Image (cartoon, rainbow, N blue to C red; front, side, top):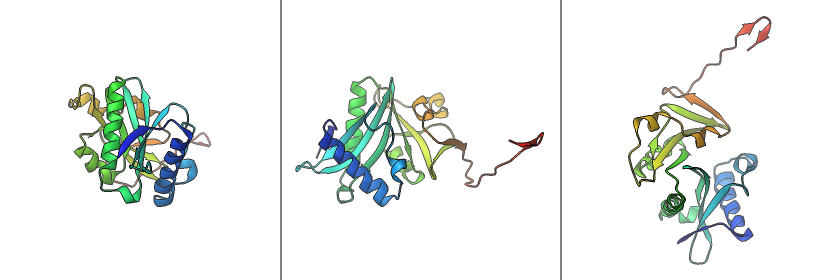
Length: 191
């Protein structure tokens, strides 16, 4: 298994096919949720390929200064349980470290928080959860320069800037999944 940077049209086709199969086919995401304006701009796509150059998994990296965000990590069904995701993440960290990135961030679904904790990612932003198109996402971060340095209390309490630019809504999650909406009437208008 080899992890490479997508550079050719063939590489990008592999990325799109894996994302289509996993996120649209398996997870039921809509096309417009999965594919966005950043596909060919300021993102780097990694592809894990088997010996026949068949795509096994992919991940997109958004780098901004000293921070990077890992996005859209997906592994094809027949390659799951073989360490493909771990190899892609390691390759992403190696690439980011070489580019001077200090912190790697990502959003994970609540059921995957423990997995990311085992990969030395820590929850950041306190109890805040990011709501995006019906998904609850937890922000996690890992220090990579210096390697595996612990996050400070301040770093754990803040949401990294690279995650704040995401489309969606941040909410406090106090263990209660229900939220109340209060509409206030002032001078005949709703607020």
